[in-house]
Image 1 (tube, one colour):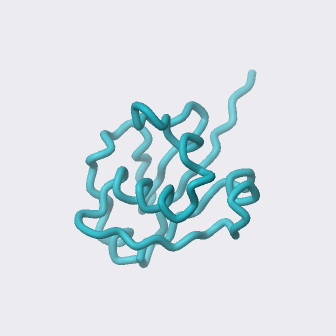
Image 2 (cartoon, helix red, strand yellow):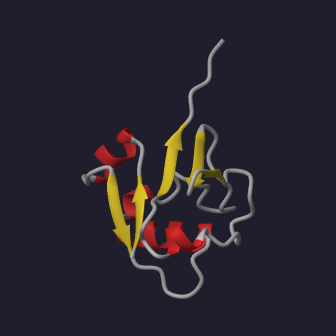
Image 3 (cartoon, rainbow, N blue to C red):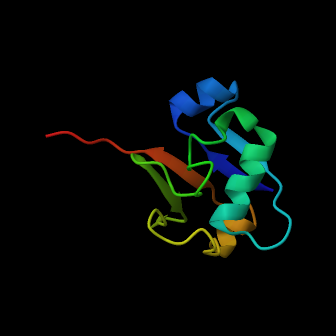
Length: 98
């Protein structure tokens, strides 16, 4: 089981806590984790990544084991610590301004 940490607004929309555990069959990639998350919480489909292209939504970032994976391809394997469930996969809302 992989723990996914959601930003507050998405956790509220999903009606869950900030941490959600998902089961990923096969390789633990960014896409596989998000597929499992959207299968468990279909109301999040299209909010973290584009439903058609799979591209990450602007102002959301992906982190795993202190690595910024936001610009990595969806097929990127997650670190072993995340795949083993000892570290979370984090979806973080970024802030912009000026």
